[in-house]
Image (tube, rainbow, N blue to C red; front, side, top):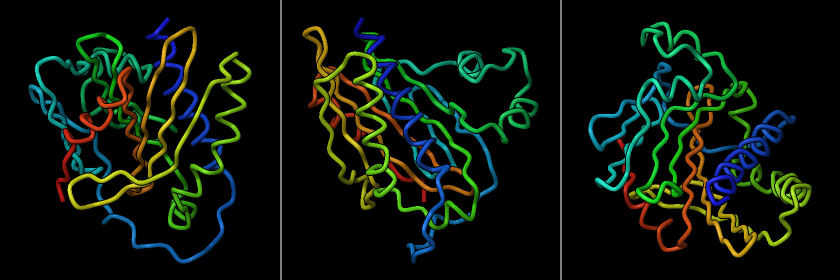
Length: 216
Protein backbone atom coordinates (compact mmCIF):
# COMPACT_ATOMS: atom_id res chain seq x y z
CA UNK A 1 0.00 0.00 0.00
CA UNK A 2 2.78 2.43 0.95
CA UNK A 3 4.75 1.72 -2.21
CA UNK A 4 1.60 2.25 -4.27
CA UNK A 5 1.03 5.70 -2.76
CA UNK A 6 4.67 6.61 -3.41
CA UNK A 7 4.45 5.61 -7.08
CA UNK A 8 1.08 7.31 -7.41
CA UNK A 9 2.47 10.60 -6.13
CA UNK A 10 5.29 10.64 -8.66
CA UNK A 11 2.94 9.65 -11.49
CA UNK A 12 0.31 12.29 -10.67
CA UNK A 13 2.91 15.05 -10.33
CA UNK A 14 4.41 14.11 -13.66
CA UNK A 15 1.02 14.10 -15.41
CA UNK A 16 0.17 17.49 -13.90
CA UNK A 17 3.46 18.99 -15.01
CA UNK A 18 3.12 17.60 -18.54
CA UNK A 19 -0.41 18.96 -18.85
CA UNK A 20 0.65 22.44 -17.83
CA UNK A 21 3.78 22.64 -19.97
CA UNK A 22 1.72 21.83 -23.05
CA UNK A 23 -0.36 24.98 -22.54
CA UNK A 24 0.52 28.20 -24.33
CA UNK A 25 3.05 30.25 -22.41
CA UNK A 26 3.15 34.01 -22.08
CA UNK A 27 6.15 35.58 -23.79
CA UNK A 28 7.56 37.46 -20.83
CA UNK A 29 11.14 38.10 -19.87
CA UNK A 30 12.87 35.12 -18.23
CA UNK A 31 16.29 34.50 -16.81
CA UNK A 32 18.76 32.98 -19.27
CA UNK A 33 18.34 29.16 -19.36
CA UNK A 34 21.22 26.85 -18.57
CA UNK A 35 23.71 26.63 -21.43
CA UNK A 36 22.65 24.39 -24.29
CA UNK A 37 24.10 20.92 -24.11
CA UNK A 38 23.87 17.98 -26.47
CA UNK A 39 21.23 15.52 -25.27
CA UNK A 40 22.66 12.68 -23.22
CA UNK A 41 21.59 10.34 -20.44
CA UNK A 42 23.07 10.30 -16.96
CA UNK A 43 25.44 7.65 -15.67
CA UNK A 44 25.58 5.62 -12.47
CA UNK A 45 28.98 4.60 -11.12
CA UNK A 46 28.76 2.75 -7.84
CA UNK A 47 26.81 4.98 -5.48
CA UNK A 48 27.09 8.10 -7.68
CA UNK A 49 24.72 9.40 -10.37
CA UNK A 50 25.79 12.26 -12.63
CA UNK A 51 24.16 13.92 -15.63
CA UNK A 52 26.25 16.30 -17.71
CA UNK A 53 23.12 17.21 -19.68
CA UNK A 54 21.19 18.34 -16.59
CA UNK A 55 24.28 19.56 -14.76
CA UNK A 56 23.63 17.73 -11.49
CA UNK A 57 24.97 14.78 -9.57
CA UNK A 58 23.86 12.75 -6.57
CA UNK A 59 25.80 10.60 -4.12
CA UNK A 60 23.85 8.06 -2.05
CA UNK A 61 24.96 5.89 0.84
CA UNK A 62 24.99 2.12 0.86
CA UNK A 63 21.40 1.95 2.11
CA UNK A 64 20.25 3.02 -1.36
CA UNK A 65 20.37 1.13 -4.63
CA UNK A 66 20.20 2.59 -8.13
CA UNK A 67 18.19 0.88 -10.82
CA UNK A 68 20.42 -0.86 -13.35
CA UNK A 69 20.56 0.12 -17.02
CA UNK A 70 18.27 -2.82 -17.79
CA UNK A 71 15.71 -1.72 -15.19
CA UNK A 72 15.78 1.86 -16.53
CA UNK A 73 15.18 0.52 -20.02
CA UNK A 74 12.18 -1.38 -18.67
CA UNK A 75 10.80 1.82 -17.12
CA UNK A 76 11.16 3.44 -20.54
CA UNK A 77 9.46 0.50 -22.28
CA UNK A 78 12.41 -0.45 -24.50
CA UNK A 79 14.20 -3.76 -24.95
CA UNK A 80 16.67 -4.55 -22.17
CA UNK A 81 19.31 -5.79 -24.65
CA UNK A 82 19.30 -2.54 -26.67
CA UNK A 83 22.80 -1.10 -27.00
CA UNK A 84 23.45 2.27 -25.27
CA UNK A 85 23.74 4.16 -28.56
CA UNK A 86 20.50 2.65 -29.86
CA UNK A 87 18.78 3.34 -26.54
CA UNK A 88 19.79 7.00 -26.66
CA UNK A 89 18.49 7.31 -30.22
CA UNK A 90 15.23 5.57 -29.28
CA UNK A 91 14.37 7.78 -26.32
CA UNK A 92 15.64 11.24 -27.29
CA UNK A 93 12.32 12.19 -28.91
CA UNK A 94 10.11 10.48 -26.31
CA UNK A 95 7.93 12.87 -24.29
CA UNK A 96 9.06 11.57 -20.88
CA UNK A 97 12.23 9.59 -20.19
CA UNK A 98 13.35 8.04 -16.90
CA UNK A 99 17.03 8.87 -16.47
CA UNK A 100 17.58 7.61 -12.92
CA UNK A 101 15.62 5.74 -10.27
CA UNK A 102 16.88 4.86 -6.79
CA UNK A 103 15.26 2.87 -4.01
CA UNK A 104 15.88 3.23 -0.28
CA UNK A 105 16.67 0.35 2.05
CA UNK A 106 13.07 0.37 3.28
CA UNK A 107 11.94 -0.28 -0.32
CA UNK A 108 9.62 2.72 0.02
CA UNK A 109 11.69 5.92 -0.17
CA UNK A 110 12.59 6.76 -3.77
CA UNK A 111 14.47 9.25 -5.91
CA UNK A 112 13.72 9.62 -9.60
CA UNK A 113 14.98 11.85 -12.38
CA UNK A 114 13.08 12.15 -15.63
CA UNK A 115 13.44 14.30 -18.70
CA UNK A 116 10.31 15.82 -20.20
CA UNK A 117 10.55 17.03 -23.80
CA UNK A 118 9.21 20.57 -24.26
CA UNK A 119 9.02 22.84 -27.30
CA UNK A 120 12.07 25.13 -27.12
CA UNK A 121 10.04 28.29 -27.69
CA UNK A 122 7.62 27.36 -24.90
CA UNK A 123 10.52 26.38 -22.66
CA UNK A 124 12.22 29.76 -23.05
CA UNK A 125 9.04 31.53 -21.90
CA UNK A 126 8.18 29.02 -19.17
CA UNK A 127 8.15 30.16 -15.55
CA UNK A 128 8.59 26.96 -13.56
CA UNK A 129 7.07 28.33 -10.34
CA UNK A 130 3.97 29.51 -12.21
CA UNK A 131 3.80 26.11 -13.86
CA UNK A 132 3.62 24.45 -10.45
CA UNK A 133 0.80 26.84 -9.54
CA UNK A 134 -1.12 25.72 -12.62
CA UNK A 135 -0.52 22.09 -11.69
CA UNK A 136 -2.07 22.37 -8.21
CA UNK A 137 -5.78 22.17 -9.24
CA UNK A 138 -5.01 19.16 -11.45
CA UNK A 139 -3.02 17.56 -8.66
CA UNK A 140 -5.75 18.06 -6.06
CA UNK A 141 -8.50 16.83 -8.39
CA UNK A 142 -6.47 13.76 -9.32
CA UNK A 143 -6.00 12.77 -5.69
CA UNK A 144 -9.65 13.50 -4.87
CA UNK A 145 -10.75 11.25 -7.72
CA UNK A 146 -8.62 8.48 -6.23
CA UNK A 147 -10.12 8.95 -2.78
CA UNK A 148 -7.22 10.87 -1.20
CA UNK A 149 -8.61 14.08 0.29
CA UNK A 150 -6.04 14.86 3.01
CA UNK A 151 -3.48 16.47 0.70
CA UNK A 152 -1.39 19.58 1.32
CA UNK A 153 1.23 21.32 -0.79
CA UNK A 154 3.75 24.15 -0.74
CA UNK A 155 5.39 25.86 -3.70
CA UNK A 156 8.81 27.14 -2.79
CA UNK A 157 12.42 26.86 -3.90
CA UNK A 158 15.02 24.27 -3.14
CA UNK A 159 18.72 25.03 -2.90
CA UNK A 160 21.39 22.78 -4.36
CA UNK A 161 24.75 24.22 -3.32
CA UNK A 162 24.46 27.94 -4.24
CA UNK A 163 21.62 27.68 -6.75
CA UNK A 164 17.86 27.78 -6.13
CA UNK A 165 15.37 25.74 -8.13
CA UNK A 166 11.55 25.99 -8.10
CA UNK A 167 10.04 23.16 -6.07
CA UNK A 168 6.71 21.66 -5.07
CA UNK A 169 6.39 19.81 -1.76
CA UNK A 170 3.36 17.56 -1.33
CA UNK A 171 2.06 15.69 1.70
CA UNK A 172 -0.56 12.93 1.35
CA UNK A 173 -2.21 11.13 4.27
CA UNK A 174 -4.12 7.93 3.59
CA UNK A 175 -5.03 4.95 5.79
CA UNK A 176 -2.77 6.11 8.59
CA UNK A 177 0.20 6.54 6.24
CA UNK A 178 1.83 9.92 5.53
CA UNK A 179 3.91 10.32 2.40
CA UNK A 180 6.11 13.36 1.72
CA UNK A 181 7.31 14.24 -1.74
CA UNK A 182 9.34 17.14 -3.11
CA UNK A 183 9.88 17.77 -6.81
CA UNK A 184 12.22 20.34 -8.30
CA UNK A 185 12.76 21.18 -11.93
CA UNK A 186 15.64 22.34 -14.12
CA UNK A 187 15.50 23.71 -17.67
CA UNK A 188 17.72 21.89 -20.15
CA UNK A 189 18.15 22.08 -23.91
CA UNK A 190 14.61 21.27 -25.10
CA UNK A 191 13.76 19.40 -21.90
CA UNK A 192 12.69 19.95 -18.32
CA UNK A 193 14.50 17.72 -15.84
CA UNK A 194 12.18 16.75 -12.99
CA UNK A 195 13.79 15.41 -9.81
CA UNK A 196 11.31 13.77 -7.43
CA UNK A 197 12.14 12.77 -3.85
CA UNK A 198 9.71 10.59 -1.87
CA UNK A 199 10.00 9.68 1.82
CA UNK A 200 7.87 8.53 4.75
CA UNK A 201 9.71 10.80 7.17
CA UNK A 202 9.68 14.52 6.39
CA UNK A 203 13.21 15.01 7.70
CA UNK A 204 14.48 12.51 5.15
CA UNK A 205 13.46 14.82 2.29
CA UNK A 206 15.89 17.54 3.37
CA UNK A 207 18.59 14.93 3.93
CA UNK A 208 18.10 13.60 0.39
CA UNK A 209 18.41 17.09 -1.09
CA UNK A 210 21.83 17.42 0.53
CA UNK A 211 23.02 14.47 -1.54
CA UNK A 212 22.72 16.51 -4.74
CA UNK A 213 25.42 18.77 -6.20
CA UNK A 214 26.04 20.86 -9.32
CA UNK A 215 28.41 19.89 -12.11
CA UNK A 216 28.60 23.39 -13.66
